[in-house]
Image (cartoon, rainbow, N blue to C red):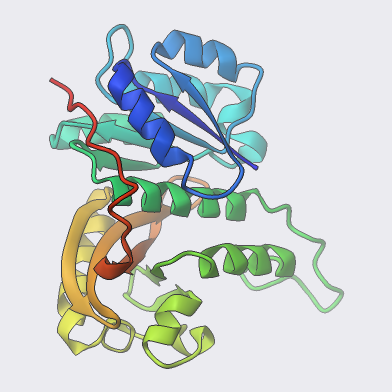
Length: 278
């Protein structure tokens, strides 16, 4: 069961974010706070799998809240940072840098795209579980290759990502695929293992490759996620997002691409938009 904490000083936003969080996956528990000091007090004795916080709040902004959360035992259990998704109306790089320096994992810019919030949160939960896997002792034949996951961890991560109604891939700094889920492989008529090591042209097709690589480079350069954009791809018209994948030290090592056919987005269950910061 995933535990998600939502922090926003606006009651309307708290209500909307809580409703969206409830559909991220089954059996989600949500704790909602309007005051960052109350949230920190609760976090002193409780574990969470994901934090979604507003940036601009009276008394303490999202960067300072994230810094104080990271200082708590639950902020980085076992040395693995709990994902923190910061919502901000500011497109100023300085705000993002402050939040990153404090330990933020990803960003969303308001007004929020509801599907993007659900997808980003889903991915962050999956990646958080991947980092929380306890490595097994190495086999007698020697340690696993650098960067590899234990067998149980790899199987669990693949199961989670293969259950998503989206085409998900991860590409390294050179643009080579290091992961592809079943949905993406099926859309391309192949198996996920066949896509590992592939370049942008094979992974996204000739029409998307150049734009996808340029978007990856932007994420790698800034360390920030990109707003969702529409594009034509395998499976029809897609809504695509790009987000950084960080190692335990906070360095961006790869880019996560998530694309979902627009026909698969259920609009009827999406509530009206949250209030932007002023």
